[in-house]
Image (cartoon, rainbow over all chains, first blue to last red; front, side, top):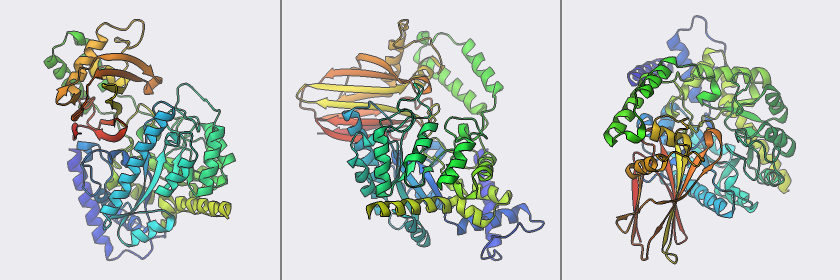
Length: 425
Length: 155
């Protein structure tokens, strides 16, 4: 049913877009036309979406790249495989550029653990690079801001590299330059548990360093020297304040939202948003339901689950067939009573708030596809145009939308490069 | 990647072979909530109490029975017996993992290794199982899932 609905919505959008092409102005940086119909609004939004460079700063797609046979050049069904990004769907969604972040799940923090993490991180990075080389007619590896504009002009997807979690740096500062030389242009200092660089926002053991560790400060300085953006997403609040204080260049949050709108430790307080603006940095909005809205109650599902459990015999006494039947029954309940998803309206609620607190120059998009990101209406890369449609609906101009989709992040990127050049000179 | 309740469904396994020691070691790192959901249909159940003083006598048999269907390693064509040498809990809260260590004697030469890992694909259509393979220092990493349940290597 959902797929059918999406098909018809897509048809509507396509028809509206095609119908508008003949009359679309060169620039849509104008006020909303009087008495604009829904179809006209969508057509105007899609035309803007087509003109601006669209950049998503966070996808964990490199993790998919170690699946044998996975090919970014092929279109995948997200409902069958869970895959959210490939070149064909980026093109469908009008997504011009993306940061593929190599994420390594954190294991034991010793030399052996760090070495394994480094090997896996490099394997993922190499797989991305190889994909861009094999599919040079579709995509290219991007290393600086200008690369994305050139690739967009050539009709190709721009693929940037990042690393999510400083764990693969281990205790060896020279790894930062190794990753830079590979093409990495941002590093998220920490992930869901503390590492040797910094404290996590979500480590249940609490802070270990009180923010960024002394070694983490060395890593930030090295990132500044090389021209790698410092990413504070996943870090504790103290990590954010330390990064602002320590980094010589503006910082980014590659996938975080506003805590005033959704109270979650991974989101940023208004004070942090204001400081981000003073710093010249940018917060990239992410499409994770738990960070976008407080999950509503789902009493029908809870009641059905409870009823099923109440009538269930102990798992240890079940035959294999009974276990399979019980699993099917639980899966049926989950299908019948899904948790209400977050929507594109929630996304733009966060954007509205960040713009009100920090200003239009400090917000962007980092969907976290292939890392848990994906909501109703923005389920994968093929649907990101719906963000632009909602922005247009709320009155954002083309110039503002360009800043949100790429201009702000590219400004930070250029500033980071300028600081690196200054430090190296 | 999200951090809360690990919405990206992952497990981590490390398989290491050392010819000199005739030893095959398997380490499985599974989110405890996923283990509970798979075994007793309740992610937050305390009934099995893995690694606690009151651990249920059903905990390990249920786990091994589940793993038999969803995880195996074949060395030289023979299925490796999954005898658990140790098990520990790592981390806390939604990120708490059950870590299993399995050791098996495996005399050289190792001619082939087949790894099948579809744990929790019965719960989540998008479950991803990362495998680190280390055969006498030669490292490989890959992901297995519903689409690609197994890989075989020849030596």
